Image 1 (cartoon, rainbow, N blue to C red):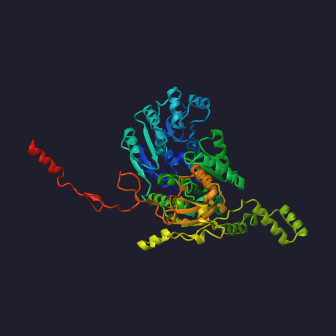
Image 2: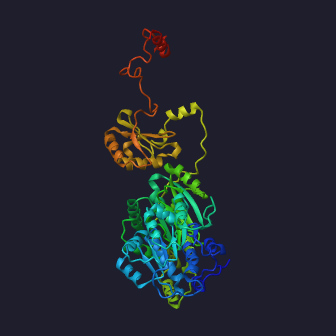
Length: 607
């Protein structure tokens, strides 16, 4: 379907950029019933919203003219939540409105204020900025909004989440009341609806989202992985897909720093994005991704808001997102503008239920599998080498001369071996990762005897005489500890052992038998190392796995305690059932023949 008719200057710009067919949101805002009206638009991330509102406001800004008049007071204002998104919108509007002679200025936090002040003083047609910087220019009298015809709120839900509501209201109150207000948001929570009712007039609703339908251009995969191998999982996923661009999401700046350093050490061309970077560092990182010098970006959620990178074919969730909206937003960095993308969630066994809730709430179809193995990656490397463009590119005379010289000195097999070694040297080595097997089977209810047997039966054979367990020792030489994961979490000594060693600062030699139960795991630590172990786990326990001393051995219930006598009657007694005293039956006192009501009646008779 071709683009609906719009301004001829913008049509030329679209043709020059190769835009032949509009996305659903672009087609919707150009329909006759949407022209010259306020718009409340919800659309998927990566659906072409910037071009959509650029086209939507053209009739208000240009009318029937193909070019703007000389720049004076700005006619349109676009507000975006982050520096990266604002600068990205600035670039998009420059090429879209370039043939119309538009002058587009940016007002973004972290950039040179004096340069922005000069651009506003010289006159412009469109201003793009972040809420804080725009308010600063307004308060200092540098930004004149008296001639504003259109105001656009891009990623409005994110601006409210970041705490910009007061700034937005200040800016909107400073613009003319007869302006058009175009509000674009990935979601429409109550606070967005409230904002729209206050600042929009009979807004035309545009909704291109389909409820509970996954993004058609994104393939979702959830990889079960041991908690101590998530970093190795990132390495193997990057190596398995070899995407031209990939983004890895972490929760914290510290996690970004650690993972970025780890990937650099392994030979990946990686950059990082987090709130602690300067604007110059962020700009350099994004530019290296755009021009291909870097292929992996490790980022926090806030730092990656609104970023649109070309050839970003892979998104990896190193840390699971906190909610399904964040899952969809992260994943929406790929699969943009009709391009295909892959989203990979690394799911430790301890976070399986959280992942399932996120997937259900997001309404996406996910394929569960194990992490890519080193052998699978090597097989893919071989296939990629066989299909490498170097074998199909046009050969020059210089290339033929070098090839003949090599064949004169070396055999064909030696040359092929050299090519294989050279290709392998450019690629980071894959990691050996454990996959515990097929997907988890549905839980089946067991009778009371089976559950009792499991509570009293450990897995000594799995924790003994192999590299996956400890060593046989006398029980007097060992101390029991408890871990907050069990069979429900697919607990297995093969990945429990490295976690115990890492959190407790011990080696396999100090670990005895491991007994896995339904909801917890108990294990032994050599008595001489137990105090040091207990101190270490108190300092290093994470949110997923908690380790503490076990009050009782694996054969006793957790809350087993000796009988301590009637409540409030002192310490423990020797006999479980002491003999009844006078006035008691079976250890319980007789009830007074006169209860509270009888006593009340008796007292009333004598009163």
